[in-house]
Image: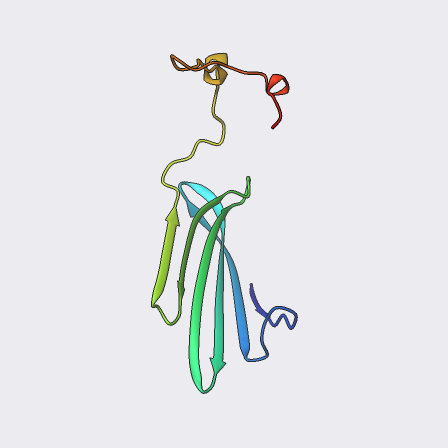
Length: 113
């Protein structure tokens, strides 16, 4: 699927956005790979940006994102390397012991300044 988007409310008339969505696999899970290319021409100069997201089809969780802006002068990458979508917890996982020297105070009993 290849979609061309021109959003007049948020995009200048000189901007062209192209979105491409494909189904892939990442971490042995089915994902949507969404690619966005933004092309802007201003004062005769071209500026191209790319952003990609890999979204888990079952959970909607972002497993990876990449981007590069200003004709490749700025880049980022975020990748989940391991995830457990069905973790198991015990009551112990939700208990908290105050450190030595710390006193628990009820906020309603505090003086208001």
